[in-house]
Amino acid sequence: MSSGVAVDPSCQETFQSLKLGKKTKFIVFKLSDDLQKIQVEKSSESGNYDEFLDALPANSPRYAVYDFEYEKDEGKRSKICFVAWSPDEAKIKEKMLYASSKDALRRSLVGLAVEVQGTDLDEISYEQVLDKILRMTS
Image (cartoon, rainbow, N blue to C red; front, side, top):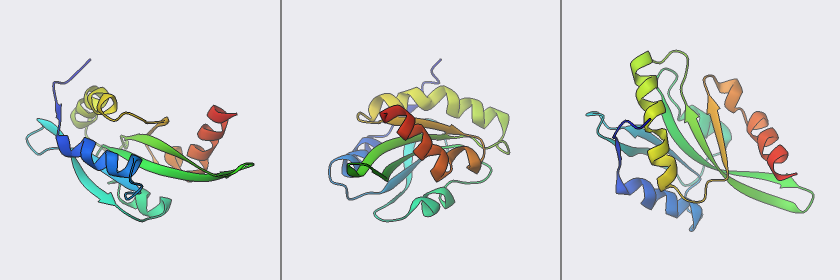
């Protein structure tokens, strides 16, 4: 199911700076006020995982990408994580629109390694995401 929402070109441009340039640590995307396109709401060149979580609103859905770094036997690793954030407190209509628009953004961001969906912060905690990555890579 697709909502017909377009992806603003700035989404891919900002994603490329995260993926290739390693200049960006995370990106938060939102639907425009007229609900016609997905756009970049915020990006950060630095920031740890807690700062990333703080950038997600408590009562409104968002999409986000985080350059997730972790340690494994061979040393430091990195995976690009896509987060579909849909908090329980969000309005039903808004959650449905975000859910039906997600694939348009996902398809435009080539190179995502992991997708995580969360309705509360526990589901997208550092530990939960790390566990998912480690299960996927072992």
